[in-house]
Image (cartoon, rainbow over all chains, first blue to last red; front, side):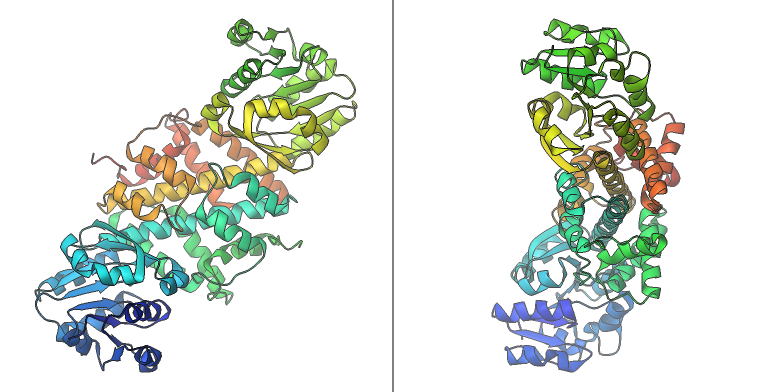
Length: 297
Length: 297
């Protein structure tokens, strides 16, 4: 048996698996495109042929794939994790997927006498590489306790937020804040630019007070320099907002600011900008006005 | 001659004038409702009969009134500051008013061989009382230098942001950030509430990362407790947003998130909630959904 299994070696999952291997854990990995595991094997990891094989080798299996359907496929599809799972085993899902679907998936896993933690992450690719991700976890505290060494290998802030499904809902809350704060920064910089203000001086004047945010302090300067390199892409954020809007719809609450940003991201995708950082949101307002933030430099 | 004059003794102006008197400056004051000056006179201030008399007694006159028309009236109306002003004198306008109108008012004052600083403030009534306001100043740096002792008596962060009018425009930028961040917090808490999350645990999980803002950390807990006491009222914020939207319109830039919040504040005013704190914005979303943040407590 291995210490830990990992399914899904995209940008985030690959970096997380690498940190587990570097910590000295016996780690089995699987990815749809098998070659993504090559350098992990060189580091001491072990690649297996299916998600089911991962579950046969490890009684704790971490997942990090793209969307709700992908989680369903690697858990309940052919040769999925559920085909190899033993009673008492634990699945930790680090993907960002539907909060509602998560509750259903978790219950189906519970029916196999196995456990589920939904444990979406934030902190971007840099946080994944450095092992400093924030992890928001829904599920039983005892299951967090048994997996603490592995969680601490990939993240630095590990917060239990409630029962199964709560982790995904907190991630949705997180994304609302991220994108609507991003809208605030975009509108603020656009007005400042149109009015001929010195953008750096404007940021210094307001960032320390009631107008302040992580987004203003971290992405504001990047936007002024027109540096659109992604911490997190528009394509991924737009996918996350689709989940957030679906969750809000299911729960019957209006989130009009978030809906507005979703539409703006859609417009930017239509312009071929889906792979830019999600702070390129300001470009949707620029297209509507002909004003470009920072373009006087 | 006095050291300094002050016109407009509302909640903010009264506290600012009091700090000037407490610092030992010989301070002349005027207010439309004269009785607001009584306790300042008891502290050692001197009340005079008109804004013009303030200007005859002091060659630096601070203003803090409500709106563009009020500034125009106390400066250029009957017995206004301009009727008593001497060449070389300085007007410092701490009101939040139109950036465009400010440029015109400043030029008219310049034609009298006098100077203008637009110096809107943020930090709320608490900042005014404690002398810790943030002051965003447009105008000549030399005029800031001559008034530094008085500015430091009322504020703790004094930032020169550009020429005449720039202070008001930066204040507009500030208010965009404040209210759209407030929208973010409102939507986030509403979704969390509807999904049955523990709101305090949710805040702790997200406030330290990319979702963080002053508004989330400071008004979030207040909203969870349904404490709507005003740091700044909906009525005042709605007035500020009217100025912001007019400025954006003049400059030809779309600020759809800010426009949305403006409409939501209008709805809340129609419900008789104009005197609540501007973080009661969430009530507009609550009315649309029947969900109440924190109401499970």
